[in-house]
Every structure is written in C-alpha cells, then in structure tokens.
Image (cartoon, rainbow, N blue to C red):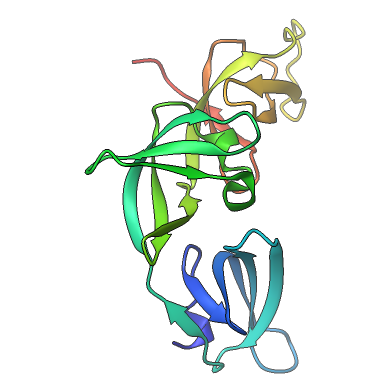
Length: 188
C-alpha cells in the first residue's frame, strides 16, 4: 500500500519488524514534496519509532484480526488480563504491549484487541473514554476564570487536569490521545 494510506491502528512490516501505527501526520511544506510523518510502536515491546515517508512510498501493510474483549483486571505490574467476548478465552498482555492503555480502561469495560497470527499484540482505544474522578482538591468558591485547572486522579489511575467545578465521584470524558479533559458526563 502507499504511505499516504497509513492510518492509526494499521500494522506495517518495516525491515522485518512488525509495527502498529500510533499517529500519522500529513504535511505539505511550502517547499518540496508532501510527506507523512508516522509514529509507530513495535509489537515486540522494544519501544516507538518515528519515520517519514514520501506520499508515493510503498509500505508493507499487514492485516490484523480485531476482536472485542473485556478488560478484567490488572496484574499489578502494568499488564492486564482480557477476555474474548465470543469464545471466553483469556489473554494476558504485558506493559510493553499495552503502554498506558490501562489508564483509560476501567475493569469490565470493553475494548478492541488486535491479533497477528493468533497472538494478541495491542489494545485499540476509542478516541475518548468516560472515567470517574476518584480524588481532586475542592474548587475555590467564586473562581470564575475559565482557564484555571486543578489536578485530578481518576479511578483507573489516570492523572489529568479538570475545571474547578469537578468534584470527586463525577464522571468525565477524557481524550485517549493525551489524557486531557474533554467534558463532564451528564447523569442518566
């Protein structure tokens, strides 16, 4: 496939190693040809790399199997156990493969796991998730400035900054790209 077809979540084979695309950025500079800057995470847990491709460059795409999984629990060392929603098989992923994904997953929540040759390689997160604020300092009465944020710790362990009106126990929506606060979740 051509490099300009790369999207987040796709897998590519570069120099004999399998990578999952974490982020892509299409750039058209004032001078010179357009290019694609891709940030990719190695599925063997050796870290991330960034590579620049020309729009016409050819990359070796790899087909991945996507399955709906339920996150069960953390192993305490940054890894987690997931259950296949169809076959009820359990799969364990270590922290090298998960990265910071567990900060966005509450126990018993559903996610999509990517498999290659029957082996789980990573978890695909949605653009945003809902989490519950576990701890945050009280807001200052009368503080009306809109750009003031305070620290908050969520039930999943995620640390983020929220507006002063957010209280412990409230559900908020956060971006899985950078962990930033998006909005308060309205009660049912």
